[in-house]
Amino acid sequence: MSSTERERFLAGVHVGVLAVDGTGDGAGAGAGAGGAPLAVPIWYAYHPGGLVTVLTGRDSVKTRRIRAAGRFTLCVQQEQPPCRYVSVAGPVVAIEDRIDPDERAALAHRYLPPATARSYLAATAEQLVADVAVRMRPERWLSGDFTAIAEQLQGVVPAASEGVSRPPSGLAGPA
Image: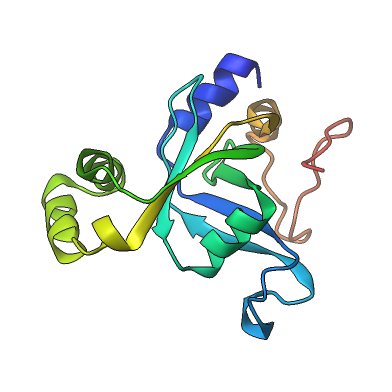
């Protein structure tokens, strides 16, 4: 993907998977002990050229690890063909203790239908004081767009005796 395409894709509505290093957080065996990274689904906000923002629990394992590492990675994908993804990593530039109610409402409305978002915001109002806003500056981008492969595979149907068809020669799948 070009820079513009990957930024536009990241700005789209996807559930992201946030990954952060696991060394030195004292999180214990249930949270990826031994330095294993923590990878969890999360809502996020991003506008092309800006920062990636996530809102999460002030005292969560995720926040402790982000504070210790000073950076995280976010990966988003489109599961329906043609499959595409963007992964972005970078340093945390701010962890803000005060959540802006308008920003939180915008995030809820990004992911939920209007009536559901209003109910969600009312039911979870305590998160305005229990959460922090984490802001990351994207530095390293990885992306993949398998549209061309999907177009070449259209019409390739497995024969009943074969079970699974093989892609036409010369096609390489995701690495």
